[in-house]
Length: 425
Image (cartoon, rainbow, N blue to C red; front, side, top):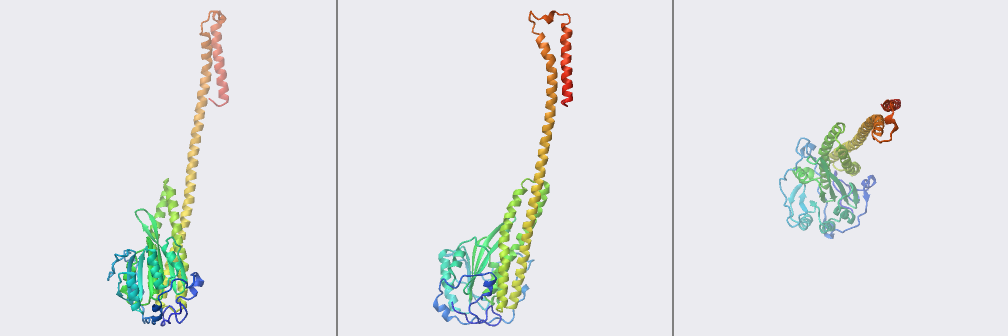
């Protein structure tokens, strides 16, 4: 695709071929070229210069969600219709100078109205679109086929890629579910071009209606173009990480209590939370490099200074969150080690108790066996001489009875002495 007309001062690019430049590529984006679907010729030929940047930009408190405000999305002031014929098209709007001028009912109508507004910008939101819908968008906005393929498939890693004059951004959103005490992840794919921004949501990706509402309330910010909308989306995703961090911190505190309380089910909970932190780390760590890449591109090509400060603020937040996630993983590893040590100690104590019980049982068996042997001797002698046979010489012997009693006593005493010496008694 050829070079776009130069922007006014304060824009993202100034009289250079392409929109985003090569600096972002050097910092981490993958250059896949501008090959792919071709946009209709009449659009590129009749596209005039973009609208000039406003002289002043809004202060941050005027539009960005503050910490004390609820995270629940609010309804837009002008509600765009939810398309009945295409359930995947969540919302499509065309803007001019920061103001919504139309809310088309279909993608085809969006294309038509954007062609009629060369200085306008289209913001299209999709949820799990079909292949034909994405191919339609690709043909209209010259989206690269590799980016379209990635947008169709979920489970992509967070990344920032440049295809000619279009940026393709993959974000991993997260939310904490209190009832299940679990972290749920979703994906948000964003196409950013000269006069359009397309979002594709998969899974638990955040509803961007609140972002759209805040941007429409501040038209001077929305007038900065798709890069300002991209920033607002990044800000919403990063802000969504804060409740997850708070929920995970609470879970770790509970796990520490359960570990030292002897709860046998805590090992499984530690493992499950560790796996969630691995996924959380995969969502936040690449985002740090992506934001620094965008910051370098914004600074290189003179994007609005206030917008650059906003982006640096998001980069600071995601860096802090990434460090917290790293700390969570380390803490869970240490807790798992401590739990393993406590479990081993408990098992050793149980084995020691079993061994001691077995030893005591053996001692009792030896005592019982010793007394049984001692008592068996007189029983044997008495049994022999109690058989009453006619021919038993000892029965007629005058010393027969004392001899039998003495024999019993000698055998019993001898056995007692032997067992006593062997500590059986």
